[in-house]
Length: 393
Image (cartoon, rainbow, N blue to C red):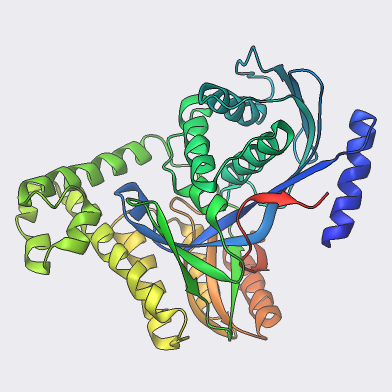
């Protein structure tokens, strides 16, 4: 759907829902990681690409403190007053709205009520941060209807607080940070420690294509906690190696290879494997930042392939659906490189493809994946898009 068609549709649905027309428009993108699975947790760098799959909110300021939000993607209405914000188990997605309102109110921002209608083209549950896109679009909406300033970094911090303290997620700052800080036409290298970012141009002869398995990205049972604890064990271990080393990321940038591999026997086998993956993946982030603008096909394939193998073999996040998908992607016409794009089980994967091959690549992947898994994949090309902000009314 083209931009103006989407705006016209959303405006008509807003009038149907609220009896008037919106006068404020906000958007925030989903994103994919081109390199950096779990490096942000430790905390390290990630190469992210915000995409032209985004969340829009059409809104109109109210004269009172009530917030009413409906969605074209999900059922139910979120309705509450800003002086009484409580979770609502009946409309779970509405807790993102309530959470953002709660943390912004606690931070001292003078919030104003509004009517809002949400429409998202970010696929849910496949590792493209649909929740962060929603949170950042809400931050922009509250900022616009209430008339105060709010920079992208503060938006990201508030989004993380809402996710962890109100919605109940256990996430880092990377998801909202990427959605808030994205740039048109390029990827960005995000530093999870310093919270800074640099542009990473994408070689113009390449296209980025997302291939989503129908498998949820939700960690199974206690596996997220187990893996985080194992990384933490490795990180705590490094504190004894010198005052400049406080995490796995610090080892990867400050320690020589002999130091980073020393005394691994003092860790459990799993912790040592997690540690090795983070060390190597963090280096791949910086390698990709240098290679992606050049279009070096051999090196790109090597970086993506070793990232996938490391995530599967050292971090245990591979599932059968992902293995079938990587085979489909790597055998498709025009493929340059392919890897996981989310940090967990299944979800979306990403390929770099020669420009002009998108249709042939997609047809092959769909057919190959269906034959071997019995399931249909969602396959779509994406372009690098700007971070969260206002849309002209």
